[in-house]
Length: 255
Ligand code: NAP
Image (cartoon, rainbow, N blue to C red; front, side, top):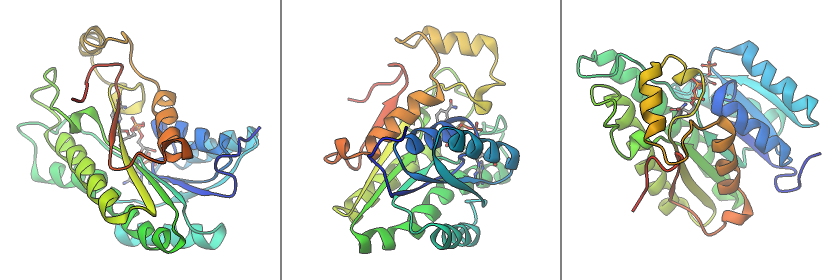
């Protein structure tokens, strides 16, 4: 059932245990890639992702590592290389948000969000880039957010650290695309509201208000994000690098 696009390629998806990351794992496996499914805590969910991939005829392995630690990220890469070979396709998806990320936020909340969302992205790209340049092949998608493009007017009291981290991911990806081309392409995906664990505790009122302000009149699915990520990694996107592509049902549009 596998497509040929990524046959023989190794893909690492951080935060592949649940939500958007899981859907990306499935999409890349369907395209033939061998999937390294990263997680930091949800071992059962990560194993479930792997079982689903195998049931669909794909292959992969689960790797536990907290991407906010460069040491743990390095150890994970060493294990992937020894198990299967170097990473060709990298999706930095692992991310966290906190309801305490607002005008009263404590310093440790800021540090925690920046360390996973921004440092985690940096650690994974930094560990991957030299090998990708040597092999003259590397494709990277960093998962940002529409909150990295503009603060949400519907949540003005929240997401200060999250929005900052996701803006920084966009800037980081742009700089890497310029520095590491043509061997490596680096793009960002900026999702709007997607139904996952991250958004399940949102109030019904806020959810309704967001959907009322979304031309597509619905929340997104993890598969919406996975399809765009797959496209940006594929040969069909060979002239696209350093870009941020929004999948938000039209709620945010770039100039
Ligand atoms: P989710 O359902 O909460 O899943 C988050 C994933 O990240 C889990 O697999 C989690 O694994 C992993 N993770 C968290 N901290 C980690 C760490 N330190 N090291 C390694 N893995 C870690 O979230 P989601 O909605 O799928 O979000 C995925 C990405 O999309 C995030 O970057 C998020 O900011 C972004 N995004 C989401 C939305 C949305 O509406 N859902 C919108 C825009 C952008 P463990 O449980 O094992 O830690």
